[in-house]
Length: 489
Image (cartoon, rainbow, N blue to C red; front, side, top):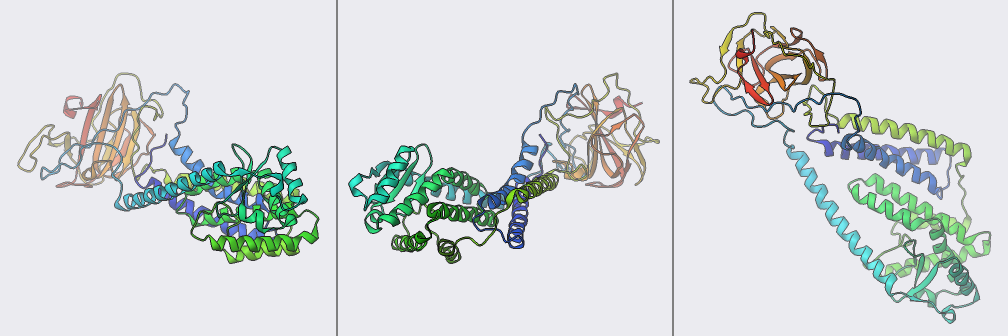
């Protein structure tokens, strides 16, 4: 699993907004350029998926552990930053991720509050719908206003679709699982005439045939996760609008005389919805968008002037979707992955890289001219706690060499938990041995790079919390700090 930076979730949230905004704009542009039908549900569903998948894909790449079957030795966790500043104040207590920034914490709390609130509302409405379905009663044959609606009900019953009636003041809706059920309000059964009611039943049956209830439920759950993203909501609304237009078309068939009938039924449905405003809304028929109402009525009365994608169009869209999803996920993954020069990664168990040498450790001096200015465990007037390493006097820019063969596991200006360390390099030498070099002017190696004893890894400096330029060296065996002078020549 890839290490994550402190603003990991904030980066992915912003990337989701940017990516879905791009997809929303691209979807509108292609729709206008090719004069696509507003009922092209597959088109808008593909655009929605192109906006959603990159975030999940990038998260999976970073959060899901990848199996490693190669015989590579695991490296040790980075040493804890435990040295003290010149005034005796601790500059670090433990290695690990930096604490989350105040902005990341604030946005995280806002996100969780919104998610909990909206999820609670969705759960309550789901239970309300289930109660309506459970309490709704089968419709007797004599309750239908005429033979058309009755015959439609029998046809659907033969297909395993049950029709029920409720006294609740709601608009008609369909349930796709676990049982396929169409719920009709009692007002609709008594208000609409025979042919009108048959069209309404056909519309809801088309939703079941298209598996719209299941699709809408999945999109609703994902919409909760991305509740902060308005572009995904707009895309979801376009998918739902296309689904409604498609079901209108299937309900009408080739019966042009039925067009004004369905339009009048839709207007009456809107009136019913206005009368129950503030109550439970369980169906996409209850639009409150004037533009959406106009589109629905225009399609009902005059048909669909737009074009479908066609086979070649679907192939082109599939190719664009593949490229867009891959590119967006890659950019998002890269943006949320810490770079070696900004934050050290902390290998834990499965975090592995090139194996360090397995032979005996032979340490050499990190400097050509070795002059100790502060010994291990030394306490002085300006250092109230024992020194955790050894300091060597060195002018800024002096060549610093690796004390033994190994693998670079950290090369950063911001060592985790040790802000006073300045620029730091850590080398894992294998067999439990590690060396840490602090207060550097610049690192000349990268994380994962193999080095040999005597190879240049940095230039000494005066970064971090220091009283003057020098090299601070720590040597560890199995996580325990040793006196560097005891292992150096």
